[in-house]
Figure 1 (cartoon, rainbow, N blue to C red):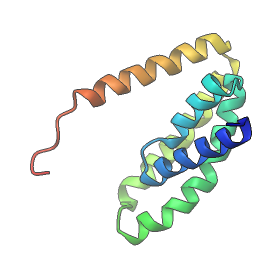
Figure 2: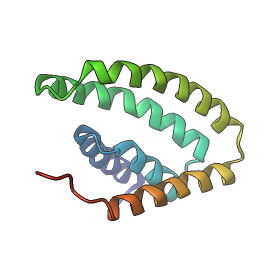
Figure 3: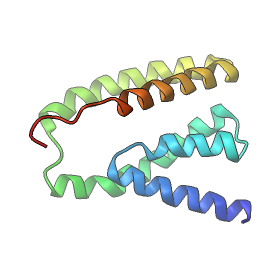
Length: 123
């Protein structure tokens, strides 16, 4: 399979996951850095650009189905904007090897947490 087709398939698969709201961009970042040989800083920038149209495509369906709580979303968005600005400044100043370690540690933490998470009562 050629590199172009592999990239298209990775984009499509992570797009589906993004539509579900479960971190398709994170998997795209892993694909780009591990399999496509893209530098971590460049992959993060591509991932941010990738997120804009995929989120815009999925958002109307979530709004239509009542899955957006504006009261909760507003402060989360404002805090997210501030956090994103600070984290982007830090991430672009870190060495790639350290950034990759932080990202890998984060993925391991989330993976372990998800493996042992209990389902909420009544679901």
